[in-house]
Image (cartoon, rainbow, N blue to C red):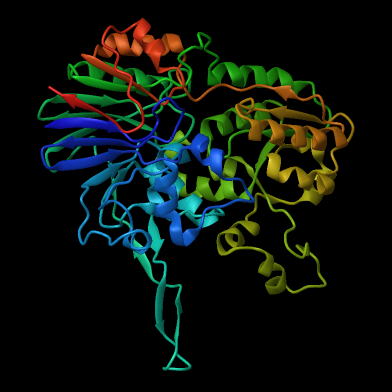
Length: 483
């Protein structure tokens, strides 16, 4: 028997967890965090209990209650974990958290397959992010060992690290009974892929997240052409913007940026998604058009340093930008009253290697020469405006999506308060989506022409029924059997 079970992204945007079973083979397509479900129960001040992750998340419907899938160190707190894993792989479409964020809970014996760009971004998240990010390796929890100073006592073990088996994509590879064809596609993050999975009952198409109006639109078009050749039995298509008929592309955005930045006499301050390297390219081009340099934060710079090694010309070069080095901790960066080694106590190991690069800049550099820079500054970095002191004539350009939930609305109100404080309000809003429009999705489905269409990653799945006669809408946990 061959089947697909929707364990995430049913009637919601994100949280993709799609189980494909064929004979004795079981794999997951993506294993992401559902932001909507998470936000229904947790806040920055109400966080889950580490010792009870699996138990709590399965009760809340945040994780599927499946044995033989999760890390024994966590699952054993709920029930006795299976000796061997009962799943054969996880295939990641891209590194956004709503597709890969719950990989941290998967057993290390289960191989993970992803693109080089996806691996690099997950590694950067793991090394630079706060919170629970264990994608390329795990730190085994709840272990104790003999005390080195007192053999009669036990102490907690914090250094037990187990590497995860990460396999980089080939254009075609197999997992037991399944053959997976990988196709790079256009999305708002490096390393995005769509898939065709050959099963004993025919081909399954999985779009992941896709668009046709970015810098790599030709990748997406090629995927559609190739997927159609498989005459798929089932297609699982994202539908984030299924009801949106408008298409405003990345190059349209770049051209609009040229006109916006040309009229700004002070410091240009911008916000764009932290890992969107295509958007970064747009701001680099806009900066060059007015003889400025884009300034990004250290996390972005570290991510670029990893992506440069695997993605080449598809991502910006680190020497095309400046790296902002903020004062942290004691605030003593470049203070001669403190030795260098004391100053460096405020920074993590990965930050230290960026501080002395020739293209690093500080708040003093930006304050003294504001017309030399476009300064990327997101919600969590607005506090640095105290140090940068934007002069008269400065402008803020916001290039992220508008709020889609109450939490984002609250965050925007706070951001607006900061902008008003520094005379940066009203601001300019300019953004283009990482997802295909409804018209583009319809064209994609028509060309691939699956026998059955299963909408995922959308809040309005029934709309797909308007243009495909055999549309099957599945609820969370719903199974579709092929053949």
